[in-house]
Image (cartoon, rainbow, N blue to C red; front, side):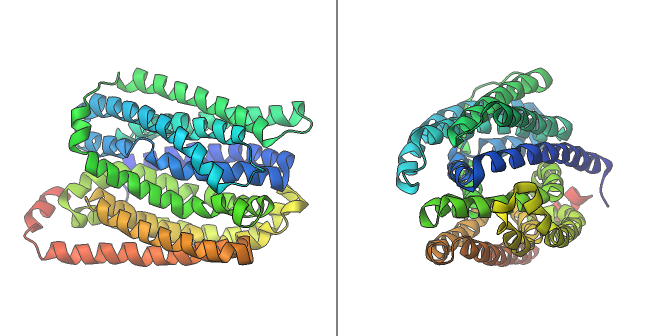
Amino acid sequence: MLSNKLFMNTWWMLLGQGSRILIQAVYFIIIARVLGPQGFGAFVGVVSLMAILSQFTGLGTGLLMIKHVARDQTSFPVFWGNALAVTIASGLIMIGLSLGIAHLVFPTTISLSLVLVIAFSDLLFLPLLDLSTLAFQSFEKMFWTSQLQVVMSVLRMIFALFLLFFDAQPLPEDWGILYLIGTIVSAAIGFIMVTFKLGLPDLNLSRYYKEAKDGLYLCLSQLAQSIFNDADKSMMPRLSSVEAAGIYTSAYRIIDVSFTPIRSLLAASMSRMFKYGEAGIEGVWSFARKIILIGCALGAVTGVFLYFIAPVMTYILGSSYQSSIFAIQWLAVIPLFKAINYFAADMLTGSGYQGRRSFIQFTVGFISIVMNLILIPKFSWHGAVFMNIAANFLLAIGLWGAVINLRKQERRKPTAALYESVSS
């Protein structure tokens, strides 16, 4: 059912991200232990906020690059150069905005210096690294995409070990500085590799201005997804406590890591989603239907595994994370929901219905934020767990409802000849 190239690309992503998981597991456990629930909660609270704000960095230029290079590889230098310029400019602006937002969102126990170093890392240098991975992804060179992701994880593991052995009482700010250095070095390596393998960037912002609307839609979609994934974690320190944030985030981190096999398949498929999407939703469906069942099966198996492995987490993270067992077991259904949601969302993006995807994601994201504002103060991380499951269920209804409705609409239009020519 899968072509050899897609299979190999998925395998490279899985191998790379699998290695990345093992490495991340080491420094994740180290940081969670040495900082404790309070320090770890402060750190992940800031990181979660930056994950939301970082979606404005680049303004969707990375996905625009994949879209155009998948259809015409000669367009790469211009879209690569435009993406770099827009990412640097927007990243610097977002760093300034993040300081003001953090002052409103976080309690005074979270220092401005911690916010600043993570802002530079995740709002400027991490997006630049992500652009390098997307550059290779646009050519379906997933081997190099996965290698770049591993580089950053290796550096962070080295710095985490340094913190463990050479700092008796590390603060979140200490880890934040090492975190920033690792991201800067990784971004530099990524740029050098893209330049060496794919060529130098060119700059023609008029090409970007023509598609700024599409880029904004892609940016808003990523923002909505990030709000969906991270808003509850950034709200937790103020609405509940940094300890609750540490417990909930440690559980969600396990869930996120378990999604890696499905994420690898999605990443390997993205370029083809755009290619088949030239024929509309029916065109991309002719490709996506071959892999959706595989992704959902992986999600279901992962959920069962997580449910039964959850009690082991306290032996790994420490007894102070005992409550994470309950959170992991309830969140075990999330990998299946994410598989269902991401495939539908990527089909909408690939076939040109990005605006509809963004609207659905923002609507559910807004509902999620409002409900978290109500539930977290009353039920702490228990409320966040319940809302996460409910929001994923609502998102599945919205996205798949849109896909089914659009397929019905396209079948009524005289596009059968175009669809037949592409699928053949």
